Amino acid sequence: MQNYDLIIRNGQIVTKDSIFQGEIAVKDGKIVEVSTNTISGNTKEEIDANGLHIMPGVIDTHVHFNEPGRDHWEGLETGSKSLAAGGATAFFDMPLNSTPPVINKKTLEAKSKLGEEKAIVNPYYWGGLVPQNINDLKDLHENGVIGFKAFMSPSGIEDFDNADDETLYKGMTEIASFGSILAVHAESTVICAQLQEEKIQAGKTSARDFVESRPIISEIEAVRRVISYAEATGCKLHVVHASSKKVTDLINDAKKRGVDASVETCAHYLSLTVKDLEEKGGLAKCAPPLRDQEEVDGLWDALANDEIDIIASDHSPAPKEMKTVTDNYFEGWGGISGAQSTLNVLLTEGYHKRNFPLEKIVQVTATNPAKRFGLEGKGALETGYDADIILVDLNETFELQEEDLFYRHQHSPYVGKTFKGNVKTTIVNGKTVFHHGEIINS
Ligand SMILES: NC(=O)N[C@H]1NC(=O)NC1=O
Ligand SMILES: [Zn+2]
Ligand SMILES: [Zn+2]
Image 1 (cartoon, rainbow, N blue to C red):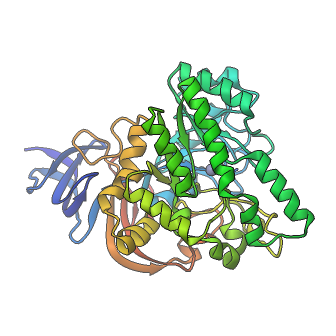
Image 2 (cartoon, protein in one colour; image 1 turned 60 degrees about the horizontal axis):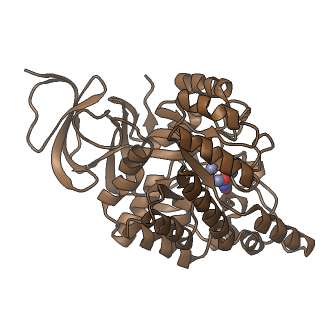
Image 3 (tube, rainbow, N blue to C red; image 1 turned 90 degrees about the horizontal axis):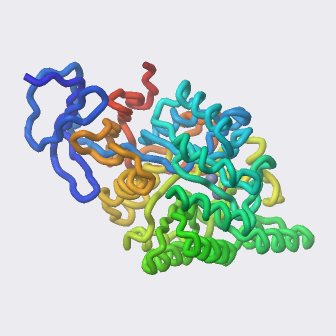
């Protein structure tokens, strides 16, 4: 007779290419059996998933939890609780806006120590690529960063300089030498700075003015440039938060030429528009900015054609005072609080509204992130994999309230939005960390 820690029964198991009625047995934090039949044996715990879908936990490849140093904006504990509530079981924390940023071994160790103490889902860390740290990249790689992140335009954070062309070229040459990957925030410094200056000089500071100061061509120019460095250096490339299909098309063209590239978009570019920025003010301010409905639709077309690899949150929170815009949209923090809502958005806007298959949601939130960044034993519900499992009620409908949010600062452009599809239970390495609206403390 087998002994298990947990058996999840009677659910609809969703994988990257199928959905079937089945059961999952867990022992010592790992999935030890997945079956369409009843799993027999002794188990310490049993969950009846009747009426629910069982999915691999979301791997959010793009969050800013800001600890150490800026944890009054967010933190590893509050940030990871929000993720658990939203069905994420792992995150990749960006090297900024923590201060000091993660740009060498020492700063990586400081952050990962805090992550071990505080994160309730699996933490991974990006290292930064900045003009000052080319000689630290290898050390960061050897100490376990998932990859590197550079900004091609000012980051908004004074201790994290953007990478000029020389830094990109040298950095990518170095990163390629040990086979790691560079993620880029791709907007053109020149275009954004000049247009912003012109707008402000002319006293044009509306939501639409802000959006026009960071046009899609600015992303296109930066992406084309960084693809040329990827081709020249052989460095693996990941473009984060593409706001338009015109941008994702460039990465797909590069892939066809043999460039090792991938692209991410975020839940907000798939569900919010300039109209939301006008209505919600600073809460919906981000860079690249929200676009118009046709760009939202374009991104969904790209997703339907498997042209977007990963969907992340780019959760980049700040205190509410910094997110209040009165009449000047160039003021206030650019960054959206969204880590808790990624799956809600994909289920509502994708599965329910656009018939976007659950299997593809699994691909862009779990399978592809695990594969692209080499996470062994993560991103799938298969024997031998880590038991990072979520139970989802596809039909639960609710209006998001501020008090539902586990963020340090309870705001989000999604507050007031009606979602269909919600996470009921989140299991991380075999342990339930979230159940029916509550964080379960160990
Ligand atoms: N520094 C930082 O988090 N910036 C992020 N915010 C945002 O809206 N886009 C970003 O890159
Ligand atoms: Zn960015
Ligand atoms: Zn970011």
